[in-house]
Image 1 (cartoon, rainbow, N blue to C red):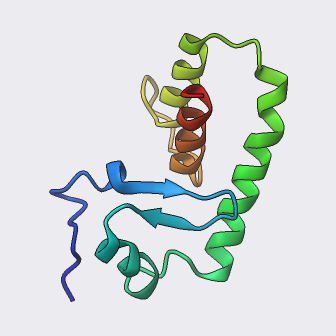
Image 2: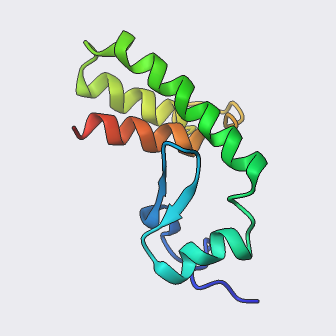
Length: 105
């Protein structure tokens, strides 16, 4: 089965959001359905792992309220693997999404 969006060609990340309950969603309705039915990205285990990452990040936010926008951007770049050759951390895109969501408030 072909996917509505091809991650190798399309900017899939621009359509993705991570909900506080751990689910992954897409603003593209057809691709959103495929996230669960084809890619199995909203299985119980994956949702729980993402939820744990979101909860850990949200516990960190109050401790970093005095961070500048530049510091938040640097944290997002670091989590996104920019500026270092270390392997990406598990569920890093979830943290990057929430950092950007927090920064835009």
